[in-house]
Image (cartoon, helix red, strand yellow):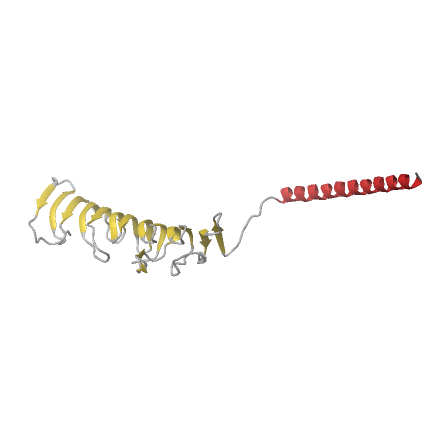
Length: 223
């Protein structure tokens, strides 16, 4: 009987000690939590790069200056940017400092450094962009596999602002079909054939009456 009473007293002491430990732990945790709230969020997060993976552990979003290359098929386009990858590692979207355009697995130099948004197809080939280039040209473009298809352009050097539509061509060949826009006091629509001869032009300049001019095949390019 005495042994039983002693064991009961030991159990009660153990229970009291455990309760005290739990209470102390709860107080410490609450204090830490309150301290965290009092400190508020960090004012600055500084890091070189961030890599976000999907449920399978595959890199899908790369952020950095430059963005990391792990999991990215393209290795020559590391710029200060946010890169969204397809499931196979091909570039699909680049936001920030634009890399050189890439078509059919090969990269080509840009005419000037560029910042904006670049969209690529499932093979990593550039198919559209919203960019401002350091040469003073702003461009919104949609591309065919071989290059520019439709572009909205503001060119500070030439003074042209408007749209261009190009013929479908193999890579490296550029043939403009029509151009509509303004330059100075003139507004015009110009149609060109594949030989790049201007075949028709509708223009308005200042207070003069609008003019519509057509040309035979073999005409020179639009001015």
